[in-house]
Amino acid sequence: MVTTADKAATLQKLHSDPELLLVVNVWDAITASVVARTPGTTALATPSHGIAAAHGYPDGEQIPRDEMIAAVGLVARTAGDLPVSADLEAGYGDPGGTVSRAIDVGIVGANLEDQMKPLDESAKAVRAAVAAGEAAGVPFVLNARTDAFVRAGEKDPEEVLTDAIARGRAYLDAGASNFFVPGKLDETQVGRLVEALGERKVNLIGVPGSISLDRAQQLGVSRVSYGPWSQNVALTALAKLAEDVYAGGGLPADTRKLN
Image (cartoon, rainbow, N blue to C red; front, side, top):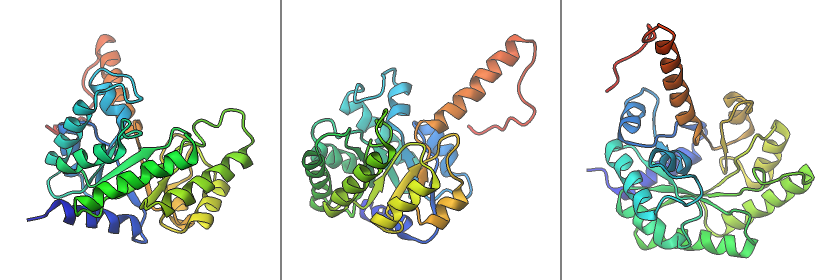
C-alpha cells in the first residue's frame, strides 16, 4: 500500500531529480482522471484559481476553506498512487492548520503564496506549514511562492529580482522544499534565481511566451506547472465547440472519448 508519506517522498524526489518535473494542473475528478492516465504523468497539482472558478468563486481565498479542501481531496482520491500538490493560496490565515487538513485528505505538497506581505510574516507562515508536515510524519513538499513579479507593477526589474531572491532565501531557510516564482520571466532572470538559490529549487509557471521547457531544464529549474492555464485551454476548446455548433458545424474530427 502506498501511504501519504510515500507519495510525499516521491514528490520530493521528483523535484530534486535532474529531469525537469512537468505538472499539468487539474481541478476536479474528471480532469484528474484524464491527466493521471496520460503517459508521462508523474504527479498532479491543483490551481486555486481553477478550483475557485469551477465552484463559482473568484480567486483570492473567496472559496471557503472547507470547499477547497474537499475539492483537492477529491483530486487526491482520483489520482490513486500519484502524488498531488495543492495550491492553498496564502493558507487562509492559518497556514499550519490548512496544510494539516490538506494532508488529512491525501495532499502531499502545496503552494503557499506570500502576497508580498512583510518578509518576517511570510517566513513565519512557511515555518508553520513545514511544521504541520513534520507533525503529521509526512515529508511535505512546501512550494513557497512569491508574488514579487506578478505584483511588480512599475517597479524597477532589478529591484523586483533582488526582492525575489531575498524572499526565496528566507523561505528555503525556513524549511520550504522549493521556491515558486510565477510570472513571465526571461532567461536571465531565471538563471539568476537558480544561481542564487540553487539548482532544482526554483519552480516556474508556464504562460504564453515563457522560456522553453528545454531551456528551463538547462538552467536548472525544478518544476514547471500551468496553474489556471490548463483550465483555460479546456475552456477555449469548449467555447470553440459552441461557436462551431452555432455556425452549423459539429464535433472536431480528432475528438477523443475520455470519460
